[in-house]
Image (spheres, rainbow, N blue to C red):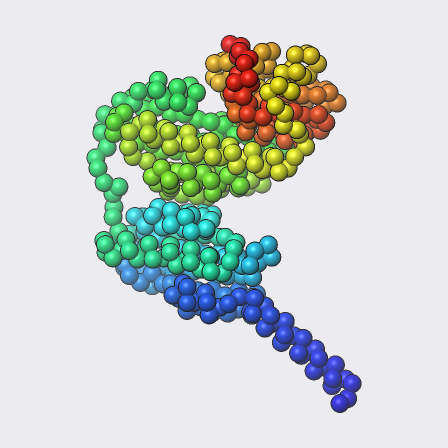
Amino acid sequence: MHPSLLSKLSSSVLIVGCCLSVQGALDTNRIEQVTGLKGSWNAAEGVFKVTAPRNDVTVKVDEWKMPPFMGLTSWAAFLAGRKAEAMVMGDLVLFEDEVNPVMSVALENGLQVTALHNHFFHADPQVYFMHIGGEGTEEKLASGVKAALVKGKEIRAATPQPAKSFGGAIPQQNAISAAPLAEMFTAKPQEKDGMVKFVFGRVARMDCGCDVGKEMGVNTWASFGGTDDNAVVDGDFACRENELQPVLKSLRGAGIQIVAIHHHMIGETPRYVFLHYWGRGKAADLAKAIRLARGEQTKAGAAAARAEGGFKEISAADFEKRRSKGKAPVLDVRTAQEFAKGHVTGAINMDIHSPDFAAKAAQFDKRKPILVNCHVGSRGAIAAAELSRMGFKNVFNLDGGLAAWEKAGHEAEK
């Protein structure tokens, strides 16, 4: 065979082999079997996509009967992964009463929920779009997609037309007791006409170099209305990307409805995703659910900080030994309300979620040791990582926080 012809043939074999290996990396037949949906293969991108048109309920947009082809089709696209066997991304077309049950099923089956919003105005019934993602085995990802779609079908089979109410009357006269909720959140609320609102700030840096916080809209908040025994809560969580899934799982586990997931800003560092929620029940139970979700959020932030490193976590005994020498400042990074209830002797209060945290911290000598604590150690880890990023060389976080320090026999200062 002529060498040039052999070269061309070899190149053709390599090209075909490459394409086959990409498709071969995904068991497309198995994905179809598990999801119960027919798919299509895009060789150029190495993507296998399954689709499910929403033709079970008539949707009108601006009084026009909308065909599924115009954007009412759920889909899930699979790609061979790098860290895991495969990854999936998709968009589920859902009606209002399907969103949260389907979200719970998706989360329980290993999928991530990455956005929730509407695509249309003047839609009847209202339609929402829940974006999903995930990494893992083809089997697990396809099973998660299948479970989410099946849950939506179960709801429509039970009630052909989407529900237009959560059910149950909300008291028209608001009479929420602020004190028990303030005690639970360790925060001072805003009060108006029997309603109670709590706002917890975060910090982001914009492209201009400006640090923005609570009053600029970078916050988590919760407003309570109704009565103590028949209350409603609505609000917003400002989540860093690694915090979103734990917060969603916590809120859904407590029966809180998620109504939107999106961003509020562009160009901020770190990036924030905002989720809006709505809940019904006793005010104390709702407050507990929000508090627990905030706890999961802080744990996720602390896990990311510890993975980043740059600081050392020390025991209560080591912390007290260093503190008693008086050579290292002690920073309590909780809120002012928490600090006032009790703190490590001689500590300085610098809320990690305050926009002026970095400016205040910059006043200390970065070459000298600095001690950090919060209540149980999570916010301390977040603050310690931030101090490390700022150039502090010897940062020590109290493992277990103030709770561990008190358990070791030390008395908090008030």
